Image (cartoon, rainbow, N blue to C red; front, top):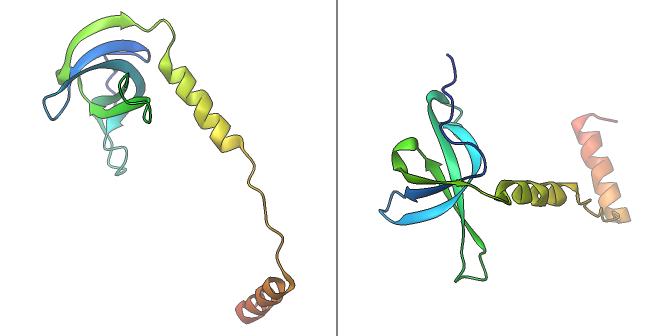
Length: 123
């Protein structure tokens, strides 16, 4: 099955009507296809995520509106000068690249691990 192309690209600024009827303006930050989460992908239905800034709420600077289809777009307001999706990708990479400190195991934990390995036949 051939993938249908997305109408909008990363960084496009859109005005959308969300499922609950509210209207939001934000930037396209992720492209995808319907059913990716359930591994039942329908390549005929392209979807995207629109991220908008929350100016009133300081505790949550951005809101993601997922599963947006072409039918939900009211108007296109151009392309973002400073694309938000690039900033979000950098933050994801920083979180993934941080090393997790490993705690040293006590003698008791080491002895328990040896017993478990013996019982599993890994000795």
